[in-house]
Amino acid sequence: MTLPRLWPYAIPLWLVAIIAGAESKLPFIETVGQWAVSEPDAFSGLAVTAFTFVLAVSTILLWVTTKKAADAAEKSAAVAVASVLPVVRIADIRAADWKECTGGGVHYRTTFLRFIFENKGSSAATVTQFATGVGIGELVPTYPPLTRDWTIKEGLFIAPNDRAAFEKVGYELAVTEEQWEKIISEEWRLRAWGTLRYRDILAGETEIGFLWRYLPVNNKFGLAEGFIERAHPDYTYHRTIS
Image 1: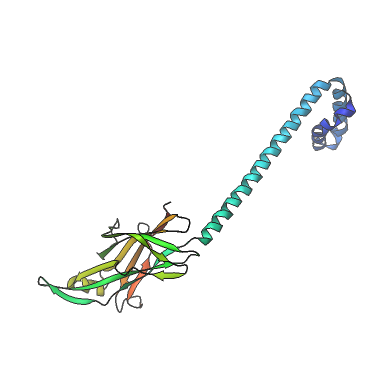
Image 2: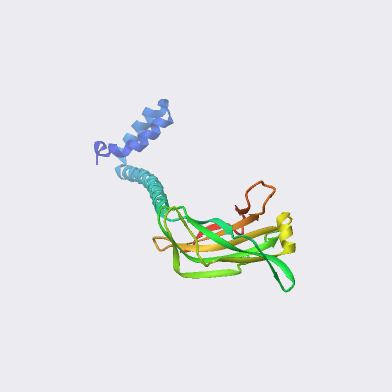
């Protein structure tokens, strides 16, 4: 084995010589050349080791680059899928006219709460389950108790960018005169909360949680009478079930 056949293997070592400085560069290269002629096997082993190291570094860099590209492709695919899926939410809670009633010597008021569902996504959704609860008091209950629960076998179909409501699914609410006075004065708050599940075009199932608060006439916010949406860590969420 002669020096001309070995010169490519000396490239990494020459680079080291160049980095080491101009003054020591030429003597170092001459020494390497002499060693390559006198000890070709040892020089070949060292050169192969150097190239193996370079190849390993190149492989790692290629793996990192490939992984980044794969992650980017996965994120892009997830964004593409999400862009065509439905996004269902409670758009409104409507209370029918309050009616005054008397029963068992107690005067109270009743109303029926109807929940309006809205699909803000790009494809249709089918609501399959709905549960709700109502509370009257100063604070939000630590755990949202659900006192009405419906499993809708046939489902409620909601087209993209459309609204829908169940005709017979809602909450029949009755409050005593004492409760009503505290609601009107905003000393107590009337809240409605719940969960709903819906199915998308890919047969995936999503569950959302919601919380709304009733504002009486002449409320301190100066808003119209009705329910407004509120945020709460234990009540409001959006999670994928399957």
